[in-house]
Image (tube, rainbow, N blue to C red):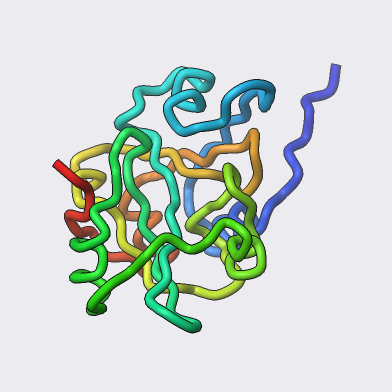
Length: 161
């Protein structure tokens, strides 16, 4: 029986183009798709699974934060590292138009534009992290430094204790 081929998303195309080592992980999309549920579905510890959050600091100013699925973004810390007075979560209705991705399938890799990106500093301690592959049901496992290089990210503390 032939292996099921995974459709290439922008995230996967970009990783292939830059010859970055990664693994794809698929999961059943029925039921909950929150980060903790996805970690359970794919059989990896939640501290290795990261979510992508997009914030805004006004018109056409967007910032991307990649944090553990169990963590909460500290908006004050996020604003500080972004060099802004204040940032807020991008309204869900604007996510697709801004990033090219939908909720639950938003990858930090391959967005419409390369926005300033910040990865929670605890990721540096891990040998791998898992982020969305650009669609619901698809995750990408890669080294934190490889992700940082691809999206030109900085490792910073941005989650609530």
